[in-house]
Image (tube, rainbow, N blue to C red; front, side, top):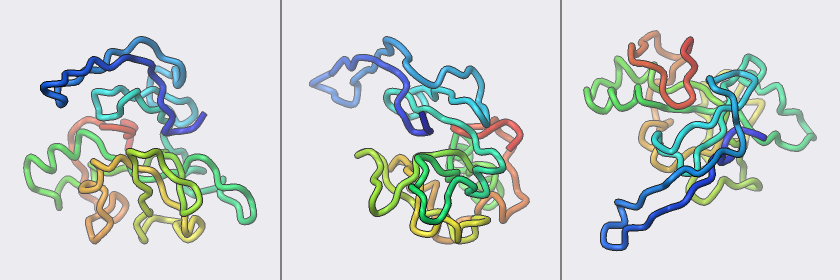
Length: 181
């Protein structure tokens, strides 16, 4: 088990005339049974936040943030403490006030690790960590899998990162964000 696995079974009811109205009906859960976001146990994040079939998620702990599992000459771990967004980002978009709220909209969270030899699933992209991420030199050439619809909010071309800004949004925690982050 690692962050990024699907965790729900279900069926899709297709609407051939309006494919954007297809519906996914959850029929069961087969992994990630923790009830609250945790640093040690996996929760199943629901499809309503944009992850078809759900997604297993575990928050980053201090060892994850320091990339402690990544050791030279050893196989790449399955997950990495990358960047996650959430509902806080929606407020940034709605207010168009990125300078004041982006720091609270992007957090660190475990994602599947990827590289030129280890690909993401077909609907995700391999994204590099921003160069100002603490300890990033330890994981040179390794990125994290991110949904393609997060491209805008996860830009690394001079957007502020959470650890470079004192600004924090006041909205509730979003995908992958622990309440104390």
